[in-house]
Image 1 (tube, rainbow, N blue to C red):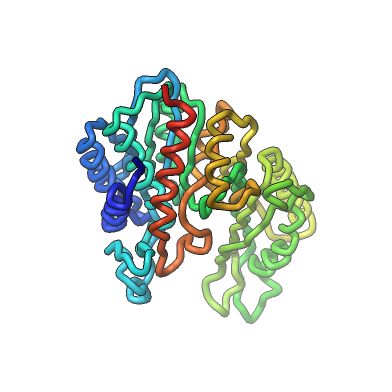
Image 2: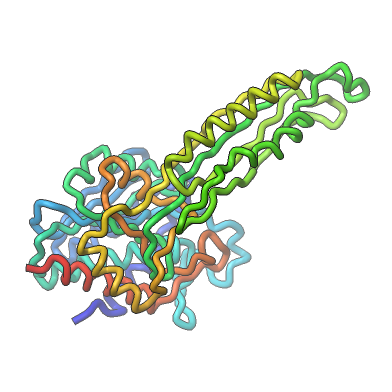
Length: 379
C-alpha cells in the first residue's frame, strides 16, 4: 500500500489557495487548515503563533525517544502581477500533470507530501523506533524567524535527523551556501550642482568602492558548492539632479560555500572600507544586515543511506549542494544535526510567474520519504 494521488494532491491544492505571501507572511490560516487535516487521522498538533498572523505548526507521530523532523516552510514570496499568470496564482489549477500556483514548488508540494506521510503512518498504525515530527515554519522567505522560534522552543533537543523538503527535483543535497548581506554607507557633503567642488559626492565615492567589493570573495572552491559569489543588488542615493549627493548606500549579497569563510569576508570588507576612508574625503562605513551559516552534512546515518539509495532511482546519483538558504541553517548548526535537502520541484520554478510543480513527483516524493522511514525505523 502506498500514498496515492488523492492522499496528497488535494492537500497541495488547498495549501496553494491559502495566501501566505511574505510580506506580510501570515501563515496562521495555513496552520489551521493543516491542524484540521491532521485531526482527521487522529494526529494532534501545536500551533506556535509568535507574532500576529505568523505561526509554525508542529505535529508528531510515534512514541520514540528520538525524533526525525520533516520540515517545510508555509510562507511564499509574493505573486507579483497576477495578470501575467497563465492561471490565477491562488487557485491551485491542475493542467497537463502540473499543479500551478504560488508556492507549488517552493514549497507547498513538499509540505503536502510530509502531511500525507504523517497521515499514512497514523492511519496504518505503523510501529516505529523513532518519533516522526512535522515542522511547518513561517517567515522562511524573510529572516527564518519561524525556524528560530521552533528551535528555541526545544524542537531540536532529541532530533537525530532533519529532512528539509526544499525543491531539488528529487536530488539529494547535502550542503547549502551561507548568506552574508552587507550594507555599505557613504556620507559626503551636499552642495549646489553648479559648484560640485564645494561638496563631496557620495555617489561617486560609492561607484569607486563597488568594484573593490569583489576582493572580499574568498579564494576557495568547495567540492560540491563551487565558489562563493557576490551580487550587488540594491543602491540608492542623492536627492536632486542639481544637488551634490551627501549620502549613498548599496547592499551586497555574499553567498559563501563554507561557514568558516564568513569571518574572512567581514575582515576583507573592513580592510576595504578602511583603505577608502584613508584616501577619500567621504566617510564610509558598513553594516551586516543579515547572515545565515553555510551547512554541510558530516555524518551519514543509516536513514540517510537508505533515503539516498531510494532517491537515486528517480534523480541523479551525484550528491548536490544548493545555492539558496533553508531553515536548516537555523536548525542544524547548534548540534551539527545530520540533515538532507530533498524535495519535488525544479529549481527553475523558484519565485517565478506561472510557478508549478509536477504532480507525479510530489506523489513520488511522499512515497520516497514514507518508504525510507519504514525501512529505517519499523519495529
